[in-house]
Structure formats: C-alpha cells, structure tokens
Length: 98
Image 1: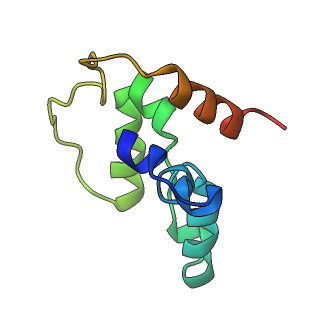
Image 2: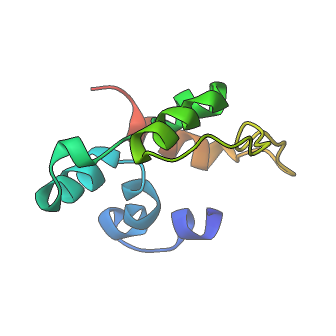
C-alpha cells in the first residue's frame, strides 16, 4: 500500500488505484447499469464489521439457508507499524467531507 501511494506519478494515477477503491458509489452505479436494483444487495463494510450478523441479511436476500459460519468481525487486527504521517495526511485530505 505504501509503495502504491508514494510512487512518483501524477496525483490522479499515483493514488488512483488505491483511492478509487474507496468510491463504492461508482462501483454500485456500474453494477446497476446491468442489473435492476431489486437484484442487488449492498452491505456497508463498516456496518458488517461492527455487526457480523448483517451477513444474515445477504443470506436471506440470496434465498439461502442460514448456516452458522463462525465468522469473526472482519479486519480486527493490529498492524505491525503505524501509518506514517505523510500517508495519514494524504488519506485524510482525500477523504475529508466536502
């Protein structure tokens, strides 16, 4: 991740690959070009990470039987090193509310 953010390129391409992944609305809009909204089910990651039972909504939407999966909340780990200040500033500025 650090290499992708700090590679010497123009801003639009330097951060595009990593930062573009944060624009879910673009991905959802693309999906809705091909499928009606009634056939799409979106789960907000932050909701799921705080309440893993949200996965049951997806299982119900798909018409599947609920099966205990024994999943833990996703991405609940510690990092080996903290985010450096430069990267923290870039991400904070890029994703700040308008």
